[in-house]
Length: 524
Image (cartoon, rainbow, N blue to C red; front, top):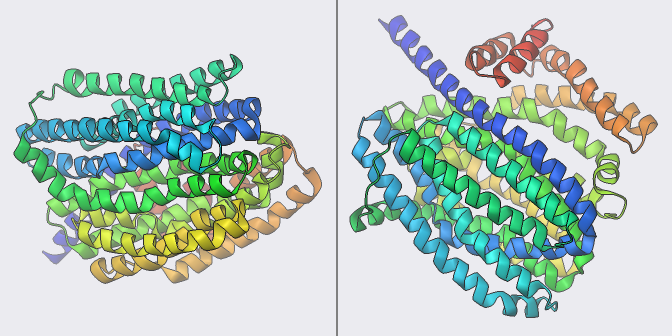
């Protein structure tokens, strides 16, 4: 009987892993294709605009992002939690009602904060001593309402388990935005080009998502109810407040930097900010897949210890997969920056190195938010986020006025991940018994240190060119799987779990299967 229970538990865990992996794979495929489209557009636009105009765009986007954070209220996360739970219990009417309530909240709040952004645009421009920022911020105010609506409806697709439809929407939205950004930049629209492209991309994605939800999926369109909206807000407001405290810092920092630095510095900062959003493709894809999975696990009554182990596996596998890429970015920041952005962005290489180091640090606490939300511990989430935000706010006047762009990058991309790791990992350890596997992490780190040594000749002899980037990628694929296996960063059991979880997952599953089998030749 005990063996039977263990077998059932093992099968359940494997099925949850496959479901999350399948979801993550479709999301990742969409995001990778989006990454390629946006990456191409980014490289073209950043060269056409130059550091000064790109700095104006960066400020306008930060302003819309700041007020958009207030409009989101955590509704997207709430939708990704409740819809899978209602689907698990076959409560279809509650699914339709929840979608209607969430979308109406987003429409009302998004419109209100878009109006606030528009009205305050002149004051923001005056505060940054550059009146030319004002009209661009006014255009960016449309991003506020469209971004929260788009975020909510795509979260509905994730919650419904419609990963293929989510992938289609994401690809069409981003490819449209990328093509329009290039076209408008070439047509001389200046700082308005990427903003107008973003607005039109959101309109296209929003329309397509609504069609998928209400036509293709046949979800019943229902009127929102005051009681339903209050119930949704009762759960989501701590998440929203946590998001406001966390994300608002990301947008406050560029605005404060605009007071103390030139548009040139803002343009260089905007480059690393865009790289950050592109790197979020990987971590965000996995996080979006894990939240419904965690929520479904708790809805089925699984133990916190079992879910905590699932979380620990997710963190360790993420470190193993992402660390060599991050190390390559740190070592090859100069050739990547010069080749990709042009030599005009002279501050970008150092900014990129700081960002990449922070990304490596952030892996350890990267999925804590999804686990806390999935378990319904939203008040605990806001407590830790508030503490972290208070520290960040205290550091802004110390770092940015004295260090300028370097202070902004250090605070946002290195100090913040360290704070996240310190505060949130403690909470996960206490509540779920989940921690970092120190021994395995040390062995994986040893493999990455060896990988860094192998990359040194690439950096020294090939210089700042595409050739060095291609050579580094080939070397990582050839040498890293054996290194991670020989050092014990991934054991034979780990590789079997990875193969089983990824089996049947399109595209990504095949690639991971090949890499796992290759590493297995050297495993102990």
